Length: 161
Image: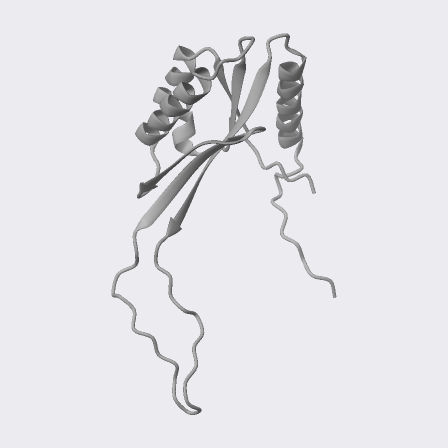
């Protein structure tokens, strides 16, 4: 018997294939554009500060016991922007990310990228995932107010296999 791999039934549907095609066409259009651009990948990752041992030692016949606090540690969310030149900006915050925090992150990123002296005007293409607060009206308005920044988000799973 072979191992069964779970594949979402919509992964290779015609609709998803068309979305992938549209995504590639948009990337190709950006590459062909006369105005130079720089791709900036933005992503958030959350983690918990609680670190405990998973294994321990004790005398044979006795359990390995560790005392732990009653509550978990705090949740940290790290947001980072990475371009072809490396990490452009990063920010850590307690708790989850939301629309207000991503707007603050984008404002700081805008200030950092536009203060760099460049010979020609550069468009910045922000590539990120499809988290709900990335689609918020405030975020869409931010990109409307900052014409040198455009967003390219994926609306599907990029796994092609």
